Structure formats: C-alpha cells, structure tokens
Image (cartoon, rainbow, N blue to C red; front, side, top):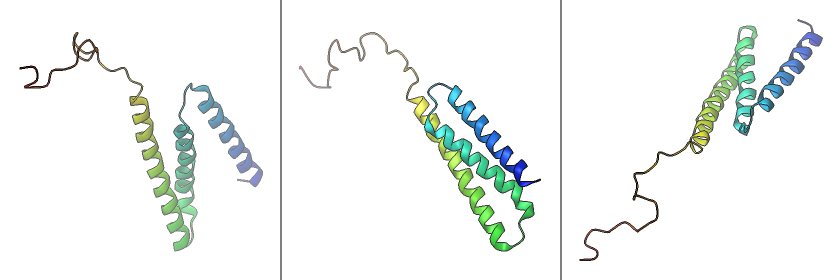
Length: 109
C-alpha cells in the first residue's frame, strides 16, 4: 500500500470514529478512549507479522497488552457508570419513605 492510501484510511477511520461516538447521546469519554485503544490493538496485531527483530516484537506485544488492558478497564468503568443511572427497585410502603425513623432494638421500652 502506498503512503497516500494509508493516510486516507487513517483520516477516514478517524472521521467515522468521531461520527459514531458523537451520534450516541451521553457517551462517556471512556468510549472514545476504548475506540482509540481498539485501533492500537488492531494495528499491533496487523503489524505483528511484519516485525523483523526481537525489539519490534516486544514493543508490539507491550502495545497490544496495554491496549487490551485499557479496553477492558474502560468497559468495566463505563458499565459501573451506567449502573449508577439504573432505577432502583421500589421499597415496600412504610420502609425508607421518611415517614418515621426506623426503630432501634431496645429503644422505647
């Protein structure tokens, strides 16, 4: 592939990634980071067969490892953040509605 083709692919991928992320409402910043690290992992995997020396292989393994860790961590954090917005189940009437404080055992006797 020529350099111009590779630059065009990079620009198109960046544009598509930006459009996809910006169209989703309330997307956490972590989603953008996951997309960037997904590109790092994919690039590392694609370049692995072209690496010639031990140093190149080591750097690619490190990049793939850290990219994967960041992707997994990002999804865990995003899941926890979205869990904070889930509706909590309703309590039975009289519990937790603030009408009267809970009785402590032994109190009022």
